[in-house]
Image (cartoon, rainbow, N blue to C red; front, top):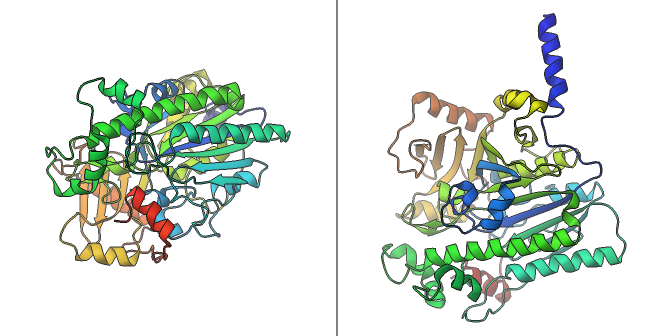
Amino acid sequence: MEFARRAALVLAVVALGCAPPSPSEPPNVLLIVVDTLRADRLGAYGSVRRLTPFLDGLASRGIVFQRAYASSCWTNPSLFTSRSAWQHGVTLLTPVSSDEVTLAEALAERGYDTAGYSANFLVSEALGYAQGFRVYATPQSRKVAGVERPVPLRAEALNQMVVDWWHDRRSRDARGPAFVYLQYMEPHWPYAPPAEILERRFGGKGRPDVDAANGAYFLANGLPVDDPRVQDLKPLYDAEVLALDTGLARLFQALEREKFLDNAVVVVTADHGEAFWDHGRVGHGGTLFDELIHVPLLVLVPGNQTRVDVGEVVSLVDVAPTVLDLAELARPTSFEGHSLRALMAAPSWRNLFGLVRGVRARSWPGAAYSDMALNEQTARRLAASASGPHHLRSVVVGPAKMITTLNGGVEYYDLARDPHERGSAPLAAAERQALERAMASARVPTGVVATGAVESLDDEQKQRLRALGYVH
């Protein structure tokens, strides 16, 4: 008994050093969400496409969560709260309830100056996403040289808005830490990669027709993958990922000059991915396969210069409590996610070369839930449709994944042996039971509970939605 007590004491003392070091002053926080960015496009996640040299450089001195999952397969349900879609009830064009506590609110209440800029106008003040922000903006789409249709604000302009805000803050001699939220739209349709990116990616050969590809986007689900009208979609998506990476490199250069990053927690992630015929479809919002819900998640903390790869299954609902933990702030009681801090330590003498981290990792919940976030109207329409898989919710535990469907069906996948979810590697009974227990322990409902009705739209809103492909 005495030996066990002393061993526990030693582990507790050593554990104090197992997480990233605490800053002497509250850190600035930079949260970057890249709309529609697939994890498999980053070199840090195994891609050989050479699209993300800057992000890969960040990963070399940050924590790389290899198995992070979005809360949904489209934007709005995945953002801001540490709760799942069946808990916060956000569906298409239904606002975030004022009763929900957002990360921005939690930080603002603790003295942070808060600013948010989203190139995706769906993440708007009108829909409740400005809660907790002192400054918040969702700029209009605009024309870009060489592209016929209006496109969301490009990275260069979004970067400048942040730098201007920081200059204004300094001119007012504002004190205390800052929280900045940025949502970039480069990989989201419509595509408009700059000329310099097209030159870098394609040179003078095989350059895609941007306007023709943008016009073919909505034809893609009715055409074979080798149809000439849609062959340029995937190369243009890749070009936009490269454009985004280039834009982020310039943002960080500017923020380093401004000293914002001298003491900062940085999080880079995506709200969801994008399908390119992985399961017979193009786009997002239609299934819960990994091409849509497996997302990149990179975290940089003050004092860490070593890449740490984390293999445990984590969720975007864990981001908000992690940020608060790294800032040494208490989490709101409404948050359902868990701080990732215990998983973030590189093996060293401070944690017995990984022993303490391993002990803590064994107690990690290790389940990630995703939801289609359907309202009743959409659910009824999909259930009556003959096409599509009609997914409802999913859970991932270790290498095992389960997806429930609107008609009460269940799909199982072994992601270790069947990473592309072809259904070729059936799960063992024990793995199925672990997934079912995870669903039961999280009190995941079996039916549609996100019941918000679609709001009426004015002409301007319809035009902006049409520009992003949400209204035809």
